[in-house]
Length: 169
Image 1 (tube, rainbow, N blue to C red):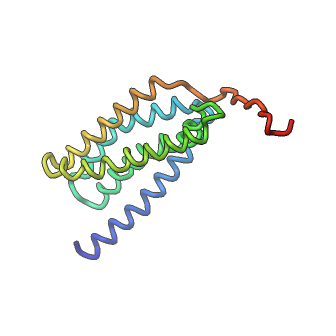
Image 2 (image 1 turned 45 degrees about the vertical axis):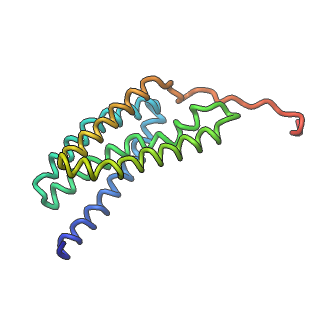
Image 3 (image 1 turned 90 degrees about the vertical axis):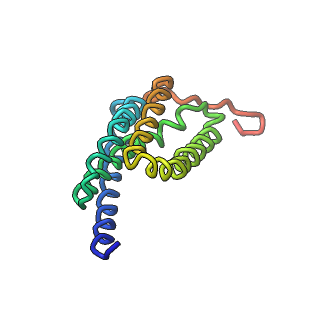
């Protein structure tokens, strides 16, 4: 890889990090207004198409097509990332919130972050970039199906745990 290509990739990564950040902030604000589950579902549905679209766009191999493709993927990641920090704790009763959130977040990081790193190389080798695209789209379908089974938490009154004997009244 020559120096110009390395610089282009670095620049694209920096710029798409801003795309991710802006998308995350925007989706977090929208989740406060429209509902967390609704924004999460919109993100996962967008993610279904984003994987396929991004890898098609990146096929020419230019810096501009790489930027466009990675930007689409960063938007697909940023939309659900914004409301996730509020939604995940709200799924658990107050008594279990810290443990449930910690376990859920860390297991998702291990499975969601580790599995693609193990599966993408053989998929790319056998089917090219589109194999990875189909895998990402399948993850979007699975995520959407699970979100459809969960409840909306925006505006739900958070319970106040009863005082225990050890706590002062």
